[in-house]
Length: 204
Image 1 (spheres, rainbow, N blue to C red):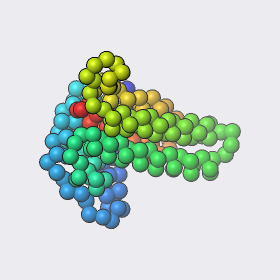
Image 2 (cartoon, one colour):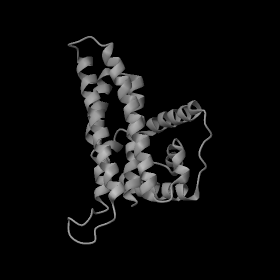
Image 3 (cartoon, one colour):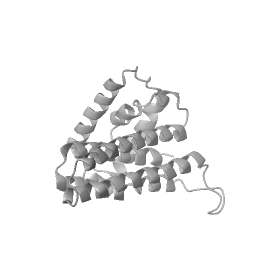
Image 4 (spheres, rainbow, N blue to C red):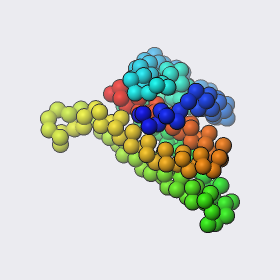
């Protein structure tokens, strides 16, 4: 995840922590119970992250993110927990893309801003499509017991999540040129969740 880590500074982590707190407050519902399984999974993910990223995802960030979905407290295995994490990420991507589309409607045709927003909208759509593939792979994963046609290697799961790096960074570059702070903040939040999903998938 070296390409993504370039863009995630301590400022980005602070931005996302604020976003998570706001989303939790807005939900109005009780937070899910933090289970020992969630804590252990996040501990392993954060340790795995330190191998790949100089600005690692913390155990606390992982738990806070998973707590955005009440199903996390009911997860009994990594497959279920990662499925939930992917759903959280897809929700963030869809929300970010919705704001891009809204700004695009108010943008003058034939401008650099219109072009950047249009590309970003496509990039976010690509991310969701890739994540849908990753989700299916994780649900069906049982380990390779024979040849290439008898199951996936565990390394193919985080590799799938890593494929969203390219459209994510393409969108980030376009938004950076626009200096669109709100959209950039949402993009940072999406990127942090991408890294988290990569780390969780790496623990299977």
